[in-house]
Every structure is written in C-alpha cells, then in structure tokens.
Length: 157
Image 1 (tube, one colour):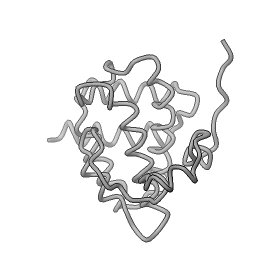
Image 2: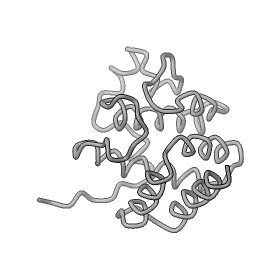
Image 3: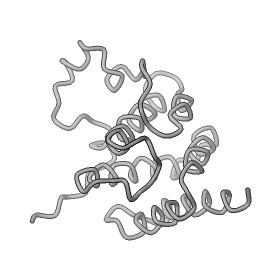
Image 4: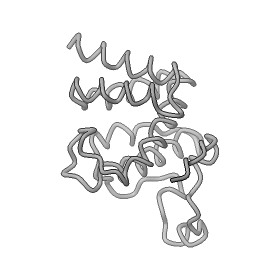
C-alpha cells in the first residue's frame, strides 16, 4: 500500500479536488469562510470564535470545523480517539497539521480557544492524541508540546 505524501500546510487548507465554483454557488462555508449552520462536532462553538478579519483565522476556523465534521461526524459526537474509523484516520493528519499551525503562530486568541476545545477530550484520549502526534509523519515538537500543555491544564482542573 503506497504511503501518502505529507501535504504542505497550503494544501491542507485547500479543497481536496472538489469544484470550488460549485461549492461557492452552494454557499459552502468552507469557500465563503463563514459557518452558517452548526457543525456536529465537540465544542463546536469554540471554533466559531476563531474568526477574524476576512480570510486568515476565519478560514482556519472553517477548515477546522470541516475536518472535525469528517472525523467526528460519523460518531455519536463523542470526543474519543478510539471512535475514529480507519477511514477517518486520513483526516487526523489534517487535524494535526491545523493544530500545529495554531500552536506555531501562538496567537493567544487562537490558542486559548483551542486549549478549551482540547479540554473536551478525556485525559487518556488527550494522552493518546499526544502520542499519535509525536509518532505521526507530521508530528513535531510544537504539536506535542501544545497538546502536552493542554493535558497539564486539564490535570490542574
């Protein structure tokens, strides 16, 4: 089975071969940068707050919501890593790449809501997520440290 190549961060924020003109005509939130209807994912309202001026963070928030819908939309909306099916695993790498981008930029207005979102995971799942991020092809110290900080914050509560 061929190993998928790592996507650049620019590729992650683009549509995967879908017709953007069609999506735009349909008022897709992932083209307009606005989320018009609720996304069935954990702590979805947190990511509605990751918005800003046109483009930038607003588009990032929509992309996170899209990935979370793909990851968690087929479950009973539980934030549990073990609920992921094998097919959903491809989106986990995209999710890690988005998290890495947020942690790397380090904007408080983005990192704080992200930490609040991550606190919705159970402690064992956060640890599992951190381990996955460390061993994933796109895993890196920035991501591992960011998830680790979220885990420490959760333990203090």
